[in-house]
Amino acid sequence: MTDATGRPGLWRIVLVAAAVMAVSMGLRQCFGLFLGPSTVELGASAAAFGFAVALHNLVWGLSQPVVGALGDRFGARPVLLGCGLLYTAGLLLFAASGNGFVALDLGIGLLTGLGIAGTGFGVLLGAVSRAAPPERRGLLVGLVSGASSAGVLVLAPLGEALIAAAGWRDAALAFAGVCGAMVALSLLLGGAPTGGAAQQAAAPAPGAWNAARTAMAHPGFVAMSVAFLACGFQLMFITTHLPRFLGLCGLAPSVGAAALAVIGVCNAIGSYVFGVLGQRYSPKRLLAGIYATRTAAILLYLNTPVSEASTLVFAAVMGATWLGVVPLVSALIGRLFGLANFSLLFGLAFVCHQIGGFAGSWMGGIVLDATGGYDAAWWALVGIGAAAALLQWPMDDRPRPADGRPREAAI
Image 1 (spheres, rainbow, N blue to C red):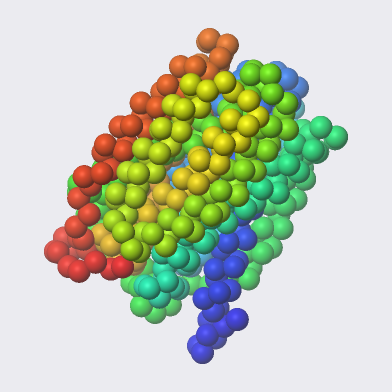
Image 2 (cartoon, rainbow, N blue to C red):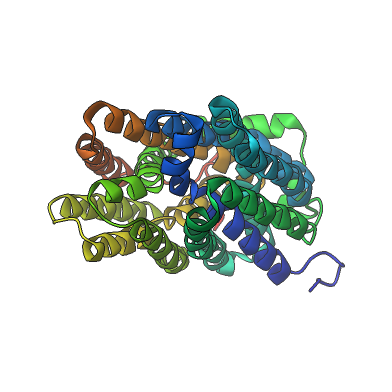
């Protein structure tokens, strides 16, 4: 599966990226399954667990531009290997430590946060975007983005079953083994980028710095990034706290695992569909539609008796719009600035997403500890989602390369 130059072929890059994405994102989407069992043994509160997941998101976001720039310069494989080992170490620390700070803040918060920065969206989508021809880029980016939830389809039921049968520590240890297999798989990806946009990505640091300055001065990029914050706020609250919320509503733990699995299935479909739609219609308007749809779904869920059926319908709607934002944000970054510094610029936008994720997951734990329920947290999700839709719709999406001069769209 190589091209005429001996470099990894397009489909090899896509398949390896999709598999790594499935494991990396699938593992983190299962953190909520450990909220009850681990906190009891570690003597930690729901807010402490929520803070650890929030720290994971914040570390991920803040390190993403740096890790992305390394991927632009040296290629995806070395970044995947290094960050994959950090991810595995974080899960091992969580499984083995009896100290709440070490297990949660250092294991889940710091190490897995650094780990996913190099095994998630920015580096992998940068590799796929540079390898794919323009007419297929959105489709393939959507395909890889959708794979991010294929993992949770398997890992959520597996984690729930392992926790029930063997305890949360053995379940976390098993997840560390899965993460180690992901590291080995990363060896199949190519080395440093060569030629075309990838060669530009290897430019000296001032090129990357100029690209970052240009992006931060572009009003459309800023608006998109701020709206991206709302995305992280909503999704990380749901990922972290939905299983506990359902337990408070009297539903079995299996319903939470099933909801995460439904989100995974529908996200795989939705990401692919939005990747295709983003090449035919306005990505900024599609993004606004996603934020509005999610907010409407939350409103309906809040005003309907919580049951297994209503939860699975809600999960299906949220899943269909879950990571459909990623190929659309990727398309806008490529359109605005080209692909030479794609991973860096995606990382800059992703900082906002992860600040939102930090706030959403931590806020949920604070509200639960303070009120014994999640009502106020759900209404916060409604308000921030509506604001994101209104901000995203009129976004300025006129292209502007690193030198600041107008040009034709890159994709």
